[in-house]
Image (cartoon, rainbow, N blue to C red; front, top):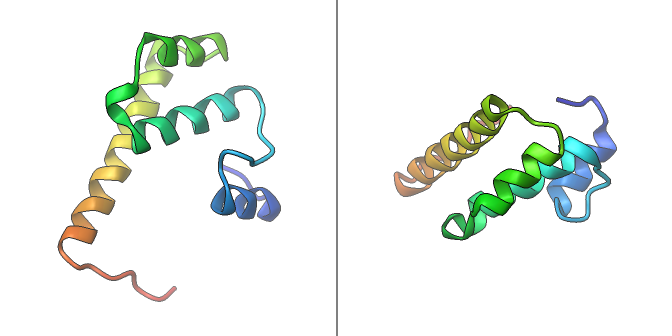
Length: 86
């Protein structure tokens, strides 16, 4: 969702420290928490997304996309799938 190579590099190096604000920061924080400790997600996390201006549909989409990528990555890792060269 960005053409900013510097931002992409920062997100890849340390997404917690990447220069984001507003909705983008809220989404990245949520996706990281859902990925790293899904059992710790609470209504506070959902409300943080709403307070950043996301609709309930957007919150749903964020959870679904994060969960999907985690699923696909774990399936690939579990089956020994290697990435193809670009």
